[in-house]
Image (tube, rainbow, N blue to C red; front, side, top):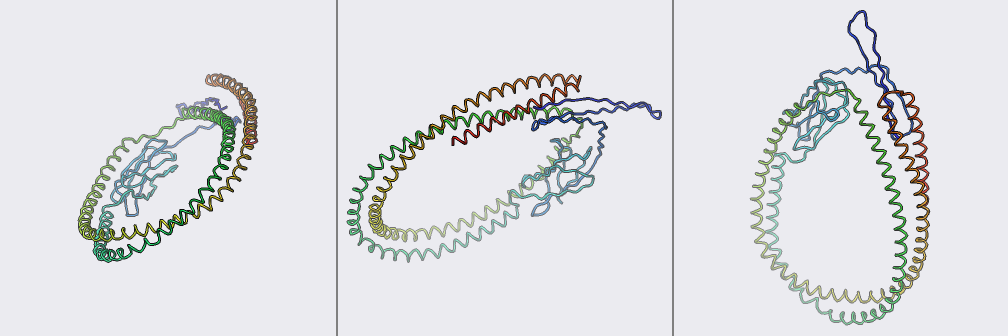
Length: 464
């Protein structure tokens, strides 16, 4: 269990003969305990913490594979608060002034509508420091759009030329397919008779196999039912164990968040909010980025018009070729149908022969399968018996878990009472001893929980 004891020590210096001003130093010592461990650490700082803040200026350069990136928004944040912002100029540079800074780690974000966001974290700034970012493009520039369009038009024109050449080829193919039309039908009848004889023999063998297989399937179904019941019992118990473990983890996480919140309230440092500067830089960046988007759209429109013209010319050539192609394909389909009939009879003949062999093989497999089904039914019965034993054993573990949960609730109540006493700030030495005692109790309880979880795991593993 985590708790925090706060001890406040006030040190006031004596008056100096050289100055009439009084100096008071407030030192806060925090006693922190970690959720992840059960040891209690006490730290009291007896020296005043002095942070020196100053105004600084840094420069940021932003570029891409195509050169400098203008109009990018650069934002510097400290603990989620913007302390400086700016927009890159035509050379891709932005100079950002920060009114108050004392070497805290900051985050730097660079965004642009045409590029992927770039970010640096945990950066320590220095006055005059120069930083650089290289952005990756999300879309194409106007020049790239025009260049790709020209390449597409060239390819379309090449296809148009090829289409004209194919028109003559289609005419020649039509004559060749008509010659092959009659050759494929001569052997179909003989193959058909041979196939019918083989199919008859196969049917007789399949009837005997079906009877054997039916009995094997019945035994296997019973075995599957037994195994499913055994698995259901194990799954239900495993799910309960997982839910209990998750609940304990969530409770520990909640305690950790509460401690983090208390620690944050003790921080007294302030960050200069540069929200106004961020808004100004954001508007400037949006304006520049919009201009660049319009340039890309204009290039895309011109490219689209050029491509459309080339496509129309290509379409005209394709329509002429289409008529000749249809004639050739009609002749080709008639030849293919004749070949298909011949091929079908050959395949049917081969299939009948294969089916006869498979029927014999299936009969042997059915006998083997029946033996395996009987064995599976026996194993399923054993698995169900083991699952029922596991269920009884886990009921005993559930009773032990309830005892641990009850003890945990009592310790939590004691912890809440102790936290209330600590907030009053009295008798902290005595309260620390009570906290140590509580931590030790929690540690012993965790050891019990760990042992119980191990017993569960071993029991489930043994049942498998």
